[in-house]
Length: 376
Image (cartoon, rainbow, N blue to C red; front, side, top):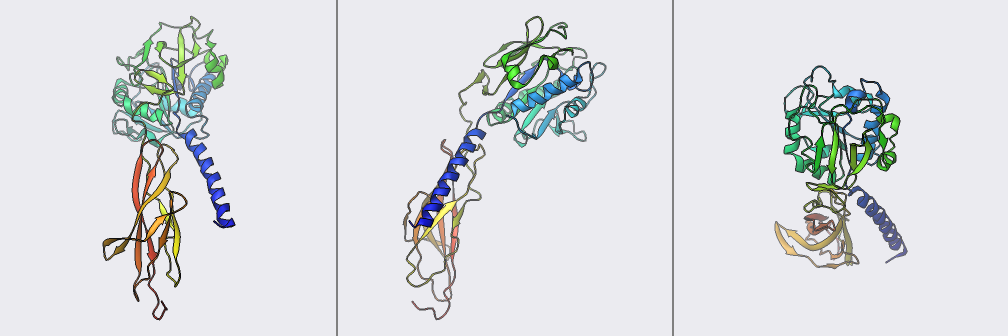
C-alpha cells in the first residue's frame, strides 16, 4: 500500500471508530416518565403553571436523552372533556413544544389516527392526562392495543411521557389505565395534598425541584413499578412519578435487551468505487471497494464483497477477481472490451450489523467501449 493509501486507510479507521461510538449510543433505549401529576392542565391553568411547565420540559429531556428540539406526538382526544378539564394542547404549548396530535381515529382536522400512526417518526410520545386533560377511553384502548409498538419504540430509542390516568372528575377513562406499560399498578388517591411533595434522587438528577412538583392538585399514585425509579412522592409517602432509561418489557424495566429488537441493515445506498473503469493496455488488476449502507437501529454496518460477475447480454459470466486487503475490497481484472462495445461488471456484497441482521445487493461497474484503433 502506498503512503497515501495508508493515510486514507488510517483516516477511514478513525472515522469508523467514531461512527461505531455514535452508533452504540443511538442504539440505547429511550426513556419512560410516568406521573400522577397532570401538568398538561396546570401548565395552562392552576396555581403553579411554571412548575407544571418545567415538569413537562424535564420529562421530555429525560426521555429523549436531552434532544435539543425533539419531534413530539401528543396523544389526546380533541373532544372537550367538560368542566374541570382543559385542552392539553394549551399546556404542552405553554411548556414550549410543537407537536402533532393523534386521537383514536376520529378523522377530525389536525388529528392523526393513533391506530396506525408510526411512532418512530417521532422522538417522543406524550400521552395526555384524563383529568384535567382530555385523554379518553377511546385513545387509551388504542394505545393499549399497540402496547408492543410503544415498548418497541422506547427500546429503539424513543421517549414516552405518560401523564395522570385516574378516571376522576368526568370519568374520561374507566379501565385498563397504563396497560401499554402493564407492569404498573395504579391507585387513585382521594385528594392528596398539593403541598409537601418530596423528590427522590432520580427526580433531582432529572433537574426537577420541589418548587416544580408542589402547588398543583394531583390524581394518581403507583404501588408497583418493576425496575423503574421513584422520581417524587406525595406528602403521605405515596409514589407520584416513576421513570426509567432501561428497556421496557411486559414484566417491567430491565437492562437486558428484549429478543427480536434488532432490525437488519439497509443496503440501499451502497456504492462501489470506482464505478467506471476505462480499459487500457497493461491495465492489470484494479482495486475496487464497496461503501455505504445504513442501519435503522444505528448499529455499525460492515460490508463484504461476496462475488463479481460480468453482465454479458444479460447473462452472468464469472469475472476474474480475488479478495482484497479487507472484506469490502476486491482486485478485479478488467478484460478488454470488444471493439466499439463496453463491458459491465456486477459486484455482489453483503452488509451486516453485528447482531445477526444482514442484507445483500449488487453494485455495477461500467467499462466504456474501446475507441477504434486502440492497440491491444
